[in-house]
Image (tube, rainbow, N blue to C red; front, side, top):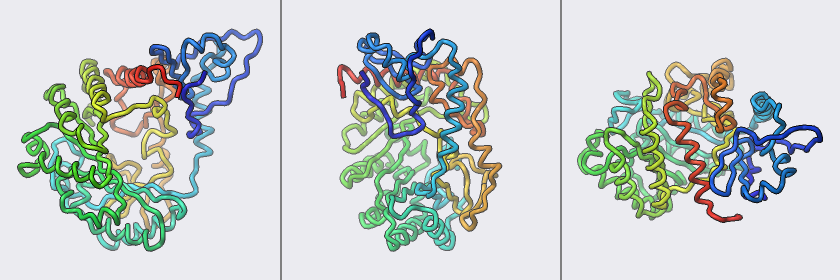
Length: 415
């Protein structure tokens, strides 16, 4: 009966229920139906609906049906707290590292807009390498995301840190968040040294307007295409975030998909910008267009979607004990985006500000409206995050539509 089950994540697994006599059962409120399939947000499982109706005991066992008086909200809270208490990794093998706060572009919406020229020095790069060597498991990959500013403005720390790890026989792979305009200055030898596997790019508008919006020299869009083509040839995944701007319209965003769907090893996904001060300011129509754009990406072969990936033990890096974010000065911050005044320690000490860490792990208080939402089991919004309002104004519609489209794409598969 079970089509997909994800046992790889302990946060997804509830102990099996045992059916009891004299108890009235009903479907749990966290199910999403589409065609012949039912997705259970409690367990990240999918069953075929027509089979499920004939197997009540299995439905109860796997939490599709629950006692009518079951306090699922309390159960979910206690279960998650218990799992978090056991989630205390001995090693830290994931790092986001700022090489610079400077950038060759000037995007109006970027948190670094009008930023500074601060660069990571050799001394900080040395201490960063030492910190990683003393905290990572040498038998597992060290995964580094290079960040900025534009990390390629200051490549020297990347060289140094990668060399140190390789010389100590630490396996390493890396990714980079970049606008891509300087990628032509990165040699194949450097890519090999960094073991670069992914480049995160963002596109707002195609053609000549791309350079204007990014504040880059003329011809930036064509250079970006050349860089993506080179990434494809080198086996590097280009992960492209396409910003949907209501003022530009849906056709503009779809034309970006058309421009890059012919390259191999390209993955694209849609996103909308959020106003940090005032929260989300998009309406339902905007999210309907975003869902349309995502469907267009799926049909174009640049995006695949599996509903079981929705369920995560943590919301983001601020809530994850298994990742460190290191700034250019060697300070540690819970978040790579919202970090001003939010440093909880440095790479030169293992003494951390636990109160600040606790603040960035606290979840937003849920309401009765939240309990009635089919996405409640997978909702883990960090209260300290400035973008916590994003479940309003159509966001819930968009996330539910993601799951329904994924179920629809399953067709008649039993795999």
